[in-house]
Length: 287
Image (cartoon, rainbow, N blue to C red; front, side):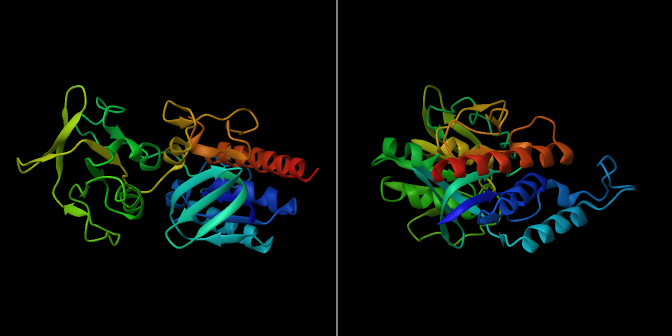
């Protein structure tokens, strides 16, 4: 079992890892990439970095620091996070267990402007298959997405629902879905229903009957993972206190998934706080 797993490899996650590793705790950082900072061609307002250093270079320097301290860096996508005394993290390649987790996944991606999606949220539109699959026993459901995250949601629903349909919404299908999942490749025009979801309208004019639509766009960010654990979300951000602690013991969050100020300097500072708070939590378990 890992001491600490950090989900996210941008400035918040790497900063947190530096503190947990220097505190003597086995730390694994899981991230598909270096986040928004790694895509910045020039950073002009970062303390101690004159000129306009390349964002990717800053992230790579941070990764080297983590590796030099003995940290494990995994370039994988997290598809699920579960908690029951300890944490269980599922990626596209493995399953890990940890005593503590830090969410540092960056800002959550905006949802698609599909008519009915926001209006029917909680009335057939769901963001969490683990949470809501029970309510769709023997019913027809659809999963909106096309990658590993959508595959995970579909696999949760398959043993429960009568039928699971994947809505790729015109995107490339990048995961190996089982044959019992029907794939609809075309764009989605809207989610149908008044009091509850009754179906999905496709751009070609066809309509697909459905009792529920599960949103699994892109990859599971901090907000999506927090939702699965039943944590409160405010203004599309994970709710954390001044110590970057959430309501679940041992679960911390830092960076753009928490802060409305999306700056590398803020993320680094919050990552440091989250790392120190995780250390304090683990040391409390040892007493």
